[in-house]
Length: 231
Ligand code: SF4
Image (tube, rainbow, N blue to C red; front, side, top):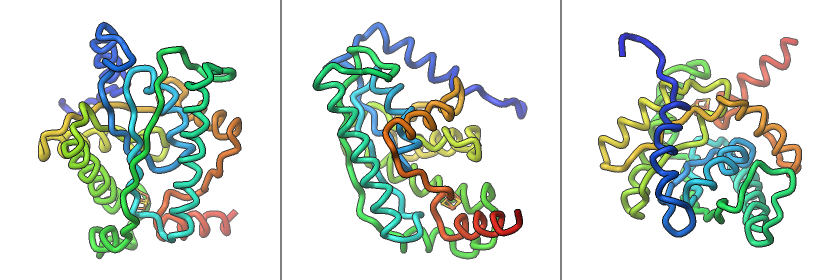
């Protein structure tokens, strides 16, 4: 690749063009979508439910406290219920959706912060965006890939690339490595492109979603607090 950045939105476009001919509804492929929270998934679900039968996979052992973990999970479920109600009633007011949009399922993994702690041991002091995050991404994407194989999904991917703070090159490389390791099929993406992040903010406001101001682990929370105290 000669150090050149890949446009993973274009890579996704290519896959979607191939799928468009196959039609939607029952024929649409099944996608296991790893999601970190409702706000990040809001745009991704709005976008991808047009092309896939979506199951959201909530696996986030990186979230520092169980109360915070449950709060994000409940918001995710509330948003999915609202989206499914739109499909049921055919009322897509305010959405960028068509009648092709399908309903969405959710699959929850047990909350297991110990697994995450062990994975990042020795990396506690590294800044957000460094090697600790790569390990954290890999932990979550490998579990998603294994679940995709177990459940017979056609593809797996993650909402994480929507964040302007998260490197899509790195996330896609990790996703592809997890695919090679497990036999699952990675769906490339960079959901911050095409104003995806901005749309997620709009949707979060429209659905009154709880939006946390830190990534998830206690170190990201401390980093955010110390930045706030400096201003
Ligand atoms: S900052 Fe976010 S991605 Fe990085 S280790 Fe913490 S929870 Fe994981």
